Length: 347
Image (cartoon, rainbow, N blue to C red; front, side):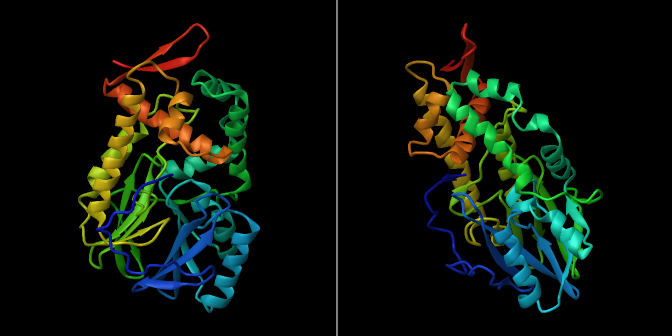
């Protein structure tokens, strides 16, 4: 995820997040819990929706001991016997699905996810070819990364199984356009691509509550990346289509995102995200005007600050996502030299 300037027009009903382990009622019958993450993006927002005698839980945090300890405290001390009733996971990334197996097994919960996200998580956990096959190293080499950076990028993939728990063998499929009844309240199921293939969002039109997951964040942009197992993908087109669809959500909703602060000003933020990606494409076009460049050479143009191994993999995927998008629109072309390196140039 990359930084963007805050949008002045956004309104934040609570200017600070709850302290670790605290629960804050951000909307009637909706509790906000913040969990720590072991990354530069150091937190994830979890929401609990009142559901009869208990709480429907939206997302889980990663599967580490610190997160388990916070959950133990919340479940035993803060919820006061009102146990989870169901678990809804928005997408397959570890900060959202990490403790899904642990929570569902402990409380006998039904897991609800979109089909693609459930299967993607299973594939990432159980298909070794996803986690650093020789073809994946070649994917990075062809695009200009050096050996040390390649090993860092490939090695990072192996953390997925460590940061997640085993999903239950059956789940409830969430489908866009259908509805969930949670505690007598109607939530419309929305899905969107780009950041994840079929990320789930929930909209309660009656009360103006929009659980936005990672699709719309107030101060940062969700990572839109291309990965070695789908090198020609165009997730940026998927994401921009999703942003256009989200304009059908009323502007006055309270957006409850998975990172940063809850906010009002959805349509303003959608416009800001669209501008951000248009500017990224313009920067790439300018960088390739005088001479062709590899993806690795474009990387510091878009991300001039020093990046650690975790950040480099995401930044590399994001640059390639913009390049693939521009190739699809006929703005850039890719040529491969005799050494197998791919060069990006203007058409």
